[in-house]
Amino acid sequence: MNLDIIDYTWIFVAVVWLAAAFRTKQPVRQYSGAARAVQIVLLVLAVMLLFVRRVQMGYLGTRLFPPSNIAYTIGVVLLFAGVLFAFWARFFLGRNWSGEITVKQDHQLIRSGPYALVRHPIYSGFIFAMLGTAIAFGQLRGFLGVVLAAIGWRLKSLIEERYMVEQFGAEYTNYKQSVKALVPFIW
Image (cartoon, rainbow, N blue to C red; front, side):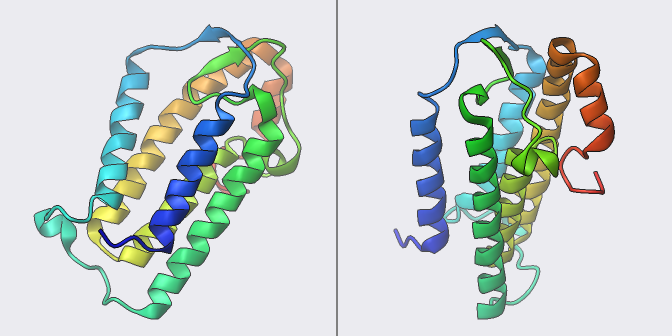
């Protein structure tokens, strides 16, 4: 198996993310509905489309542009930028972070750092990083994976926001009105 900087970057992200998961507050409320299952399926499909390169996927393996050092370099730069943005957000969220939709014990509403730019900067960062990965690989399936991941994280963010409105009331509602969800100033 030939691994490159993209593979090593995502392996590093997975290790750091897993290690950080053990340093969070206890949940007091957790969502486990059907929407969670849909979100997980979408992310698993996205990851498979992006990273299982050994499997032939018919027309999904179609290259959207010829392989080039320029496309690869642009992709890697976007990957790094997205990962750094997600790490920055994870740092600001601190022990309030969870991989699942939860309200934590003594949960705090974080509005500084990347949370002043978008309400869900971890998702934004990872979508951006996945887009970089798709550009570097150049296949249709990678871009489809980015779309599926974006849909999955948007679904998850909508449920999270219901929890945050219930937890923080008008404070979160005002935050929603002043800061976009995933793309600064746009969406």
